[in-house]
Length: 369
Image 1 (cartoon, rainbow, N blue to C red):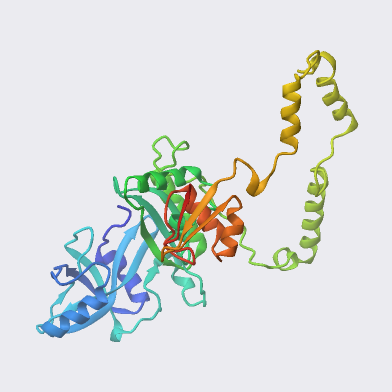
Image 2: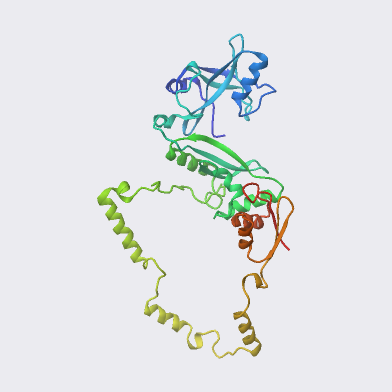
């Protein structure tokens, strides 16, 4: 568990800062008709059959990254008692809850972090989240990351651009067991990217990486995956006029030291060393001669047909969602182009023995016959 329920005295100032006028401990008595993670809908429907009033506010959590306020609805009965009727996965019995003044949000976001409170009114549009990929066989995380948009889901349907073979192997093993990896969102609506990176790194270290930390269970490779966030700005905008020129000179010098922008050429001295290594008796074929049969095979290989006519080419069979069958020997990319399908998606489906579940290639089947 990474989050804990704080005391009311610990979050009273935080509650006041985010627009709340009352704070207290609220009993959690889940109703059988209510579901997790849809508190607003639960309360709305409950009022239709039981009367009462909806109270909007926040419940609070505490962690190593400060306090978090999560937008939440609870039910107030006709006697004025406040009850949280929404169930929680951890089976908690109470929440520390703060009521919003006039049921009106001061900050239009579902999650507020105390360490980022000064940033919420700066018009920041991008929000980040921290997620974990869960192995359903043991309910343990095997990958933790930071993302925006659909980043967390791309691990499960687009592995063609992944360079993390350990994560791919884990996903394949789960699917071969007839299961599907689960995505669990550990923290959402984070507006401070540095804070998001910090949380991601802390969680990776908490569980550890296989092959790096002795206790590690994660397939993560990087710990500090922080790319420079320049967002298309020029050198002048980033470093200033003088700094920009200095950066260009540094990069130019580094490139020259590496041998320029093209393929590196060996010096005459290096070439001489290569010749010496394979000259005379140093050559593995020194004193040997190819047989006529070997010479003939070499000739045949040099003129061997390529592409669709190569004897190693696969005989591809694509079946559409409606049952149409398309076959071709070799050149899978060309076949995908003719059918207006993503080659990367179809090829990944073949490599990982799965059926695409979205996009133009959804429900298409691929096999080799």
